[in-house]
Length: 231
Length: 158
Figure 1 (cartoon, each protein chain N blue to C red):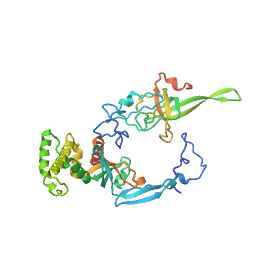
Figure 2 (cartoon, rainbow over the protein chains, first blue to last red):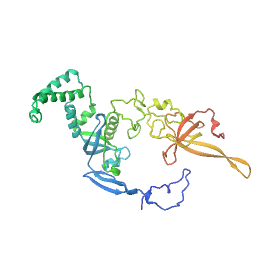
Figure 3 (cartoon, each protein chain N blue to C red):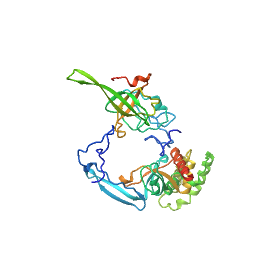
Figure 4 (tube, each protein chain N blue to C red):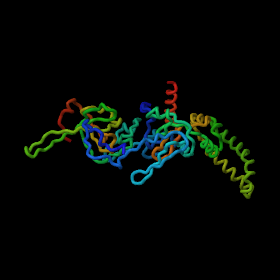
């Protein structure tokens, strides 16, 4: 038994040494760090106190990432480790830890956006007037009509089908009304890469999940990366 | 913003910084800030509600609860970042001599940024929390500024 988490060896507040009065206990052990790296998935289960299991991820390449302001989550590949507030060494060695800033693949989010809002993020314009929305709505209706030919067999009534497609399009248009994404996010989507922060502990649960950086937090880390590059 | 002076982004746990829709209730109007009452009839300082500091160990805006002992003491040292040392004086009775002797204990306590200008000699009420560090298990919950430099050296039993 090597690493102990007991505080017997620590000095007192006054600086005085503590005398050893008991040997090391199994319940107070520590284990070597996982140092999860980027790579093909490799997870080792560990039997812990009470017969419980911890999943020590040694190598991970994907995780479940959530887009907070849209309230959705998607499984995506992790492309790169970009920043770590505690240790630059962890960035260099591409270690996945909680709180690290990584770059993730944007495709699943792009696909979701297209399906939910009915338009591509890459085609977004900054200003959206109501007139434009109306035009898009009309345009969408014309575009969508050829598609129903593929699913014509499913719906019995031609009128019913048209009504449902109309309703579906209207729903998407309604969702788009007054909805915007920040310019920084749009730029990231165009490149196909998003900045995200890891919020799970890969060495404990075996997963690398987190959330996409947005708003003030995104500005903060982008600024940090810029200043690092200058050096 | 002056509170973003660390290498990691400072934010309150439980506050979604990028939330477009703001939730009402315990949140302050105009700003997304988590403030709570610590109970036991202790007033939340104005600075905690209106300030912009981020302190996860603050009893009013952080993730700690005050439970257990509530003590009072005199501030001795404020040289540490967000922590202070408090002195508590007490009398110890000696049965053989039917007399008392003066004794004291120093206590480190976490001092939230909402208590600005705490200086040695002030009287402070501290509440017990879970261990915040190796030696800090208390949190400042009330501050009474005092005048006079000699206040530190007086024997004061609370």
